[in-house]
Image (cartoon, rainbow, N blue to C red; front, side):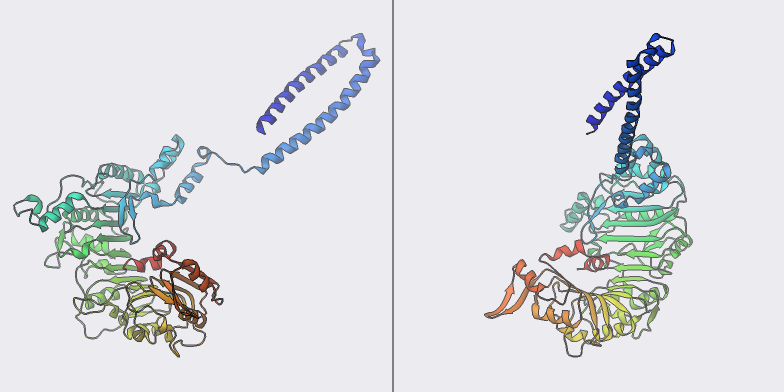
Length: 571
C-alpha cells in the first residue's frame, strides 16, 4: 500500500512540475506582447484550464484530508532514543526488578540455582543514549550481588564495585549468597568417613578456601545500606567467611538506614554448632561468633531495623535487634530460645504486624501473661509436637492478645483449647490449618462468624475429613460463612461432606488441589480417579459459583497468594 502511494505521489509531482512549467511559459508569451493574445482558441483553452485547476485543487484537498485521517488513526510509537530523560528514567523505574537478582528460587523459596543477572546492565547496551541515561540514574544500581565460593563471583565482584559508584549516595541492597560448592560438600563427607585427619588443614572448622570469596567492595568506611540479605547453603558447618561478611558490612553500615536483616540458611537444622553473632567487646553467650565491630555501633544499627527474618546468624535474644520490629520471622535452625525470651521479644515490639515462628522452644515459664499486639495482622505458627522436649510450639497462641484488625492465622495442630480461645479474642479472617484433630478443634468456628479464606492442608495427616465443620451446633450462628475454601493434598475427599460444608457455610469459591473424590452410586461407594468425572460431580454443587479441581496438588504453588505460599514453605 505504501509503495503504491509513493509511486503515485512521484508521478503526481512530475506531472505537477511539468504542468506548472507549461503554465509559466504561456504566461510569459502572453505578457511579452506576442500576437497570440488575439487567438480565440487560446482564450478558450485558458478558460478551461483555469476551471480545471480549481477542480485539481479540490481533488488534492480531498487527498490531503484522507492522508491526515489515515495518519491520525495509526498510534504513534516514538523511538526510545528520542524520549526525554525524565520519561525514559521513569520507564526504567517501572521495569520489574526481579531480573536484577542472581538467585533463582524453588517452591520453598530456597536457592535452586544462581544465574548471572542481565538487568540492569542490559539497559546500558541498547544504544549510547540509553547508556548515558541508565548510568546517570542511581536507583538502577543499588542491588549488589555476591556469590561466595562460586565461579561467577569474580565477575559479580567487579560488577558490584561498579554498581557502588553508579548508585552514588543511595542506600544499597546487599545480597550475599552461598549456593553450595562441590569442594565444601566433599570436605564434609571426608570428615564424616574419617578420610581427613586432624592434621589436615581443611579439617579445621575455621578453614576457608583462599579463592572465590571476594566481597570487600567499598572504598569508603561508611556506606548507606538499606538491606542485608544472606542466602546460604549450609554443608556441615557455618563457614568462617559468613562472619567475615557480616563483620565487614555491619562495620560500614550507617545507623538508621538498615531496614531489613534477612538470613535464609538451607540445611542449618543439621548443624550442631549454631552460635549467636556478638560484638567482640561485649559477648553474651559462652560460644558466640565474635564480630570485630563495637557493640555500641551494632546496637545502634540493630535498634532501627524494622524487619528481621532469621534461621541462623542471629544476634543474641537480648539484643536491640528485636526491639521495635514490625516483621519478625524466626525459623528452625536458630540457636536455642526460651519461652521467657520469646515473651521479651514480643514485649519489645508492641507494633509488630507480622510474626512467623517455627523453632524449638525451651520451657522455663509456669504462667505467662498475654502480650498485647494491637497491629498484628499475620501470625504463622506452623509446627507440630517437638519430639525432643514434648513441647508444642502452638502454645505460643495463649501468649498473644491481638487487636481488632483482620488477622490471618497459619497454624498446625493438634490444637488444644488455645485455638478456640484465640479465635474468641482475635478477628481471624484467614485461617490455614494442617495436622488437625476434630475433637481438639471443637469451638474454633463457634467463635468466628465469617472467614474470607479457610485453607485445610491434609498433607501426611491422619485426619482428612471435614466433619469438624459439620458437628451439630458447630457454627456460632446460622449465618456463619466461609467465602473461599481450599482443600490441599487430601488423599481423598467425600462429596457429600463437601456439599454439606458448602451449603452450611455459603462457600462462594471451592478450590481443591489433589486427591480422589468418593461418592455414593446405586451399586456402591465410588472412589473416583477420573479427573473429568471428579469435575463433573463437583459441578453439581450448584450453590457454589466457583469450583476448581486440580489433580496435581503442586500447582497450588503457582496459583496461591503469598500468605498460603509462606505456609507451604514449612511442609
